[in-house]
Amino acid sequence: MNKDISAPQRTKEIIAKHNFSFKKSLGQNFLIDQNILNNIVSAADLSPDSGVIEIGPGIGSLTERLAKKAKNVVAFEIDQRLIPILEETLEPYENAKVINQDVLEADIHAVIEENFSDGQDIMVVANLPYYVTTPIILKLLNDNLPIRGIVIMIQKEVADRIAAKPSTKEYGSLSIAIQFFAEAETVMTVPHTVFIPKPNVDSAVIKITKRTEPLAIVKDEEFMFEVVRASFAQRRKTIINNLKSFFGKDEKDKVEQALNASGIDPKRRGETLSIEEFAKLSDELHHLLK
Ligand code: SAM
Image (cartoon, rainbow, N blue to C red; front, side, top):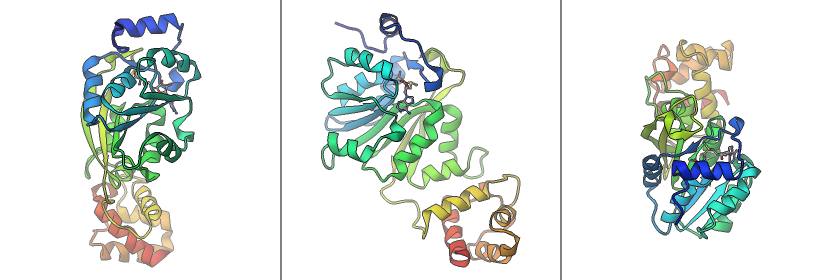
């Protein structure tokens, strides 16, 4: 009987047997802590009918546990060298399938249609490489996919920014881009010692649950996110000054009018505005300037 793939000794054996060398550029740090793996899986709240999309299975440590809990798992792995290793380690799990592709280039709608049944509960679970965290989460949330949510291990600093509330130094356009579509909560922080090899930074597991409706209905979502980014362009500036720089000095009166109509003091800073306030402001600006 084989030990779990994530058992430190088995992980080392697999790596040695296949003469695998870690690629830092792909964020290859493999988890060897059983408790943390269990916590990630339990945060996903899977039932025997659930489907899972995993991103970056590595040698299959997390995949194995997901396959034991869910109906089926489809995992995207970019590194071709890991494919024969995964074929071997995941051989006992007929409900786990690996796709050798960069998830950012994948047609996830088509993969869902092909691998999961209509109305099946689907979660995304991943221990993500840091360099692709933000584009992957935004792709998963913006593409209107039929997923319940995402449980991911990411760099702690990014997790803090995603889950941040207004008037904190972590709150910014990333917090808003994600919290507009989803609720975000930090499940736990993870020391860098539980990986092989050890990364330089600590990590956190975060759970992102999609809202059934966006937090606010706005006329033009893309325009709202432009207004948000403009409002944070220089954090020390007031919102009126940031918006004046973005829309141009000639539009000063209209910007002021939109702020007044939204009940927002022009001297406030962007970081103090709630998402609902940004939504209102964006609609007023849209009405006056578009
Ligand atoms: N899930 C394993 C674990 O927890 O031990 C490995 C996690 S490791 C941090 C990240 C994995 O993602 C690596 O196997 C890496 O090759 C893969 N990866 C990196 N970029 C990717 C991308 N754009 N698409 C799919 N997989 C990617």
